[in-house]
Image 1 (cartoon, rainbow, N blue to C red):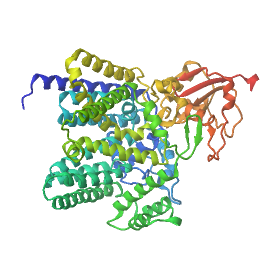
Image 2 (cartoon, rainbow, N blue to C red; image 1 turned 135 degrees about the vertical axis):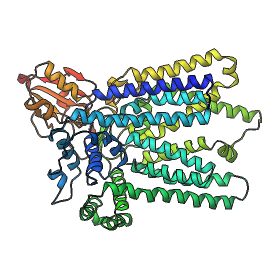
Image 3 (cartoon, one colour; image 1 turned 90 degrees about the vertical axis):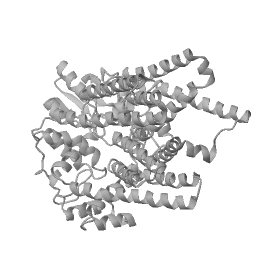
Image 4 (cartoon, one colour; image 1 turned 30 degrees about the vertical axis):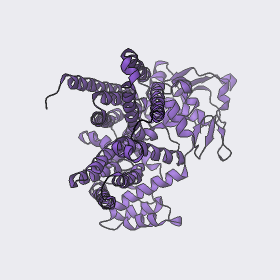
Length: 598
């Protein structure tokens, strides 16, 4: 196919955006220390590929971790197969065993931890860039070159995608799985040919293997498959039955293909060990019917792969019910806040995007009202949904995912909203295209072009200005990145990424001893040796001399307890008497406590 000048320029700009994203992600990730979840995910993925044993980290599907670990199989690495953390001969493993094994693999087995971290993350950046290309392709189909470039620009400079798309975790994978599976499902809906049924089933499998929360695609896809034939002319009953049948077949294809992937991962995982671990993980004293089914399949050939998948899915469901201890807006609690994710979305997304969203929303509302007043013939209701099925699907998924997020008991960070971001980009850019094609902006093209330059320039600068510190990014609504930790920490601000800066600071300032309360994936003793003194503020006396505290731990020790929170807090309030000597990156506060003032 011969490209015209407009297409050539479009592809050139798209290529530059993807190169920019790759460059910023790569060079920023090289400076970031091992984050908390990576300590478990990297060795888990490596064990699936080299040991074909799924005993580690079953609460997440294998694909994202295996992609991250794939470059490692070409390195000469030692894996601690003789460690009790791996053999687990006597008792089912506790959840922290995977982190202990990770420390052994990276720091105690003669391997180069920096080499392992960089190569694993390099594979994840490849996934990030692939997602950018896929979004560009889909957006171009929906709205042409300008829409494609707008969507890709929003994606390429997203602080959230740059923060978490370069790390070995399941968040970028979840977003990619939603996008790819939805694309092929809509293709099937619009043209229910048998080849599209198979493609939809394989894409559904792809999503299922990336993150368990994507089980939300089941009701989403079900609603789409039922709605479309009901909106179509002709024999609705016949079409409905066809879509239900073919949609169910696509789902069955996805479920069936779980078997070979999981079979590879559990090939050397003994059946009796799988049964033991499944029973321990699913709490048999109050076992439900699905849990009972997972236990039954755990040691039954050929059902073990599905049993392992069910085990992980049910563990994810349990965790969503149990909750997690979190600092948020000055408070500590183990249960969730219904407004947590709305606040995180408001404060962790560049204000330029909020401005563009608001402009588009007001323009659309105004257009609808004016059309109604003029009694113009506009397509709405059922006809509009069918004619704009992609857009309708985006709205539906966003609604489903928001409802699930607000009602979950897990408040783990903005990264868990990443699956809705691409659809928000689609909706806003498509709306902006309609807005700028309106009569006012058609007559005033200079104003239109100026707005585009200002908004997208502001958006891009918001991202580039915090390089390489994408994890702690907050917008001005939260006081900016400097004060964002007052809103929420954990993966929103401090995941251990600034640890290498502490190592350099200790060396440059000839510090002989440093008390450290660290939150993250690194092994302080490996890097600091006998300079490192582990500090537990709940048990140890106040230290003298140098003290370094991860801000996640610091805010956890200053937050006010919610009435339902029964753990001690306030154990870091004594530090209010001191100003930090240095803040490393954004997440490690360094103090010097004079001995005479102890």
